[in-house]
Image 1 (cartoon, rainbow over the protein chains, first blue to last red):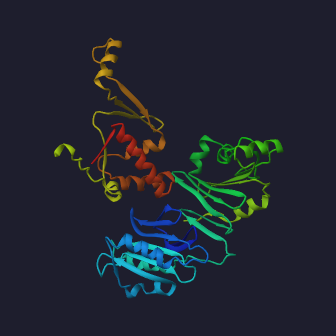
Image 2 (image 1 turned 90 degrees about the vertical axis):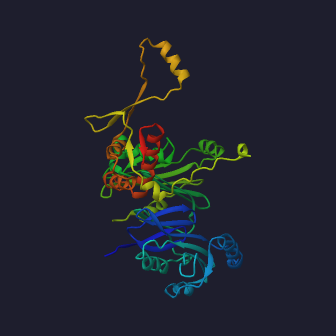
Image 3 (image 1 turned 30 degrees about the vertical axis):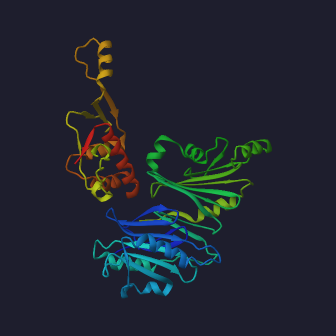
Length: 286
Length: 127
């Protein structure tokens, strides 16, 4: 029985087989792979309020793609796309449909997807994945982020600013008006904790030596807070650093991972914010 | 006007082809596996003849063989031991993922950069 999981990245959600690897190509670019070869690639662009990106954006994309691809009719199996999107399909021949340009009928987001039909079995799976694709949600609904082996829900006010997926350290940074949030995942935890303590890891992630650290009850978590004096606040502001920092790290021994969050702000950070993020950040059980 | 023609560069292999390649140790490189499992590699230094002449003048031995030692950590050693001239990079990545606790994506990134470094030092060849 094939297992599925939901992937969420920067406003896009879709359900894909758990065995597929998800690669991040950019802020608005996802690549799904199986057995080290790409199966599905999605790029998207959210429309600015009040602007309809349909005609101009599609025109641009068509100009770029028509050198190698030509417009083909949407195959009947893929007609479900027409329900949610204005769809234009491209392929190398009439039979092989490989690229689709879609504009959401509701939120006007532009989506471009590319399919790889190397294996015949993958076509129904690809259809199932694209059927689950959604690009707009209600404004009150928290934003869903799920990749690799973790998932997180954040208030919609947090927007993605940066990310890095280096071996053993995953970091995603978000920004609100006054606060910067860094989400971190380190692994394998046993190897990390051989060389450093939880406190040392937390200090290096937070990037500040003045963090007042407190251990949790079971010694598997620790939290730190920096609230500098007014003089130090001014000095830090001169260096363009955010003076208030709240950081927390947890050791998930079941999954052999370390989960960390670091909040930086110009104003004091209430502990409830940190707690609410923790409640929605977890490792997904395989 | 042959003189002004640019050399046509060979096309770099794609990701799928690269992962299907088989790495192998370069013959003549000494390596030992220590008791703790770490691998110690000793390999000859490629020095330009000019610098070799200078080195010879300062050393009295007639035949100077300059070598460099490289100690790999636990993860590096496990990858080095997996290189047997038969296993392809894709299989090495999959095996490494099982043992290291990293994700497939992380393992691919770290192994490809590790193999690149070994290749640059002249310790492995890719076939």
